Amino acid sequence: MLAAMPPSSPNPQDRGEAHIRDRVRDRGDACPGALRLHHADDGALARLRLPTGVLTPRQVRSLADAADRLGDGHLSLTSRGNIELRGLGEGCGLGLADLLREAGLLPSERHERVRNMVVSPLAGAEVQAWAARLDELLCAEDWTPELSGRFLFAVDDGRGDVAGLAPDVTLLAASGGGALLRVADRAYRVAAADAPRAALAAAGAFLAAAREAGTGAWRVRELPAGQDVDVTGHLRRAGIAAQPVPDAALPAGGPPAPGVLGDGTDFGVSVLARLGRVTTAQFRALLPAREVRVTPWRGFVLPGLAGRAAAEERLRALDEAGFITRTDSPWIGVTACTGRPGCGKSLSDVRADARPREDGLPVHWSGCARRCGHPQGVTWTDRVATAEGAYETTVVTVQGSTK
Image (cartoon, rainbow, N blue to C red; front, side):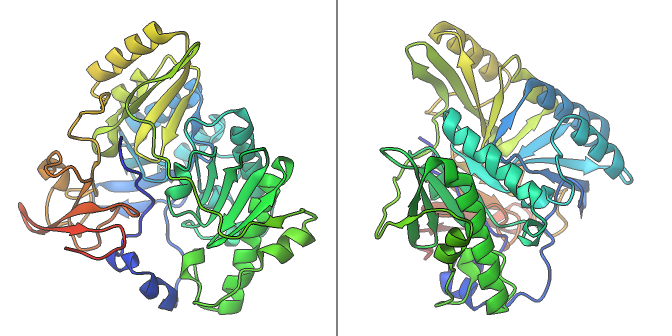
């Protein structure tokens, strides 16, 4: 099974917690969005947040059309379950915004960059409803745009898959009902009905702590050591009953493996995109489907298939379309930054240079020392370009040291 790969920072120093906590940020967050485009060497880049991780068939078709009409004919998947369009031309912003709005993918222009959420891709109706409600609350508040485009919520169905992706605020479905709200090393039990509001209150507690610290922190882990995040006070003011849970251990689950999912009458399929990038033809090949769930492991889950035979047939079709569909594929766990020609800082075309794993570890290919998109929370092989076609190789342990 593919090891969980949490969201990452472009700075390799971020592997050291002390460096993060000592940081004082003197600029605003420039993280791209669907409206704030990043201008790269291959054209503009738009990053679309998908808070519940779910796309309707209409939205799949709309995004494929956008990539064909406005971009380079590809879609990229990020380690936060976002979708990126690259190669966008000058002046396409209004057309893209109109397309996204018509598809129901842009409910609030003011809030689109703070709708950062990862959701267990196999979550049931209740957990999916938590995510949808949290997104509604984020988009309804005047203060939430103060969150950075890096601040991350996780809504976990109890298996521990997305809870392990280094989120700032975690909602975890608890055994026996209700939810665990986790911020940093503190956990609180709340009623299921209060779970989305509790996550929002925790984000408000972080913002208050960040203002008090005065360091410009974008994420909880960037707050100075000893800086209190008054989650209890914010929950109380929101009228949410919460019980502290000392030493609450997170379950250690992983992502869905590629292949057929489920048993009985509830089947689906899971596939991965090689190096996290698909053509629009591949993207359209995900249909027909009741819905398409985008995962933070750069893949897709198609739930709701009528029986194992139907699931196996869909898996064969997606294999022919070029997706990773087998657990023994050597490309599982292989990731890469954009590299040349899209990034002017890259020393090499890393996507062309990338090769399957050799030692069983996840491996990340980087065009420069920034290591954009590198894994966190797992031991991984680090391959960094030093010149055209030349790479330095180290192994980064889960603690952040190197061998």
